[in-house]
Image 1: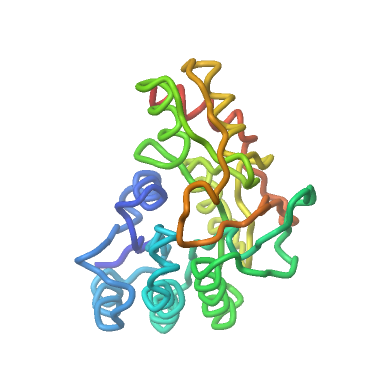
Image 2: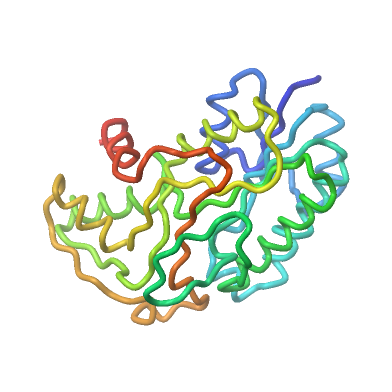
Length: 269
């Protein structure tokens, strides 16, 4: 069996969209069938499927769990990438804005070449995974993104559902980052591969907002009340970036944030 793409983490938000878009050119895998932390598991899948590319969407998405269990975060986000690299196939892997911390009042978005300072264990483990991918082969691709949402989950569906069903939502007001609509991201990833791209890309729907700002925008459709809180009110394990808005110097722009949210609304509500 030979195909163009092997997608790991294919049941998640991005993986499922990529699988739909790529159709017969891709094979999707996920736990427990294929485990990127197990070299034999990933080697068996590659030998069976024989892909030209691996698109890695597998991750521990729970930032607080990563903070509590750093060994798990490193096993998946660093060692898992190393296992994928050793297959010798071209690799696309997904990273995060949490490689940046930022500061209160910052207004200049982070570009691909800016110095990193991870906000938490999740960001640190993702940054180490980036190095595994790019140091092994400069032809590999690393995508940094943030606050992804889709038809099956993420911040926008959560805010919409809370406002629509209960008429109110608590939303954080002291963090600025970018939302990213999974179908926009998937289309851009395929375009980068198709046109021979390589290296590090920031792909997001700009500009950056706080969750509270996004929620207030949604009330134009849902009604309801937004109560603004801070991360400290939630007493979570992992610190969050203060400001982690991304921008790109690579020339690939996703649709703007409000256009993307409208596309999600028209497709899902």
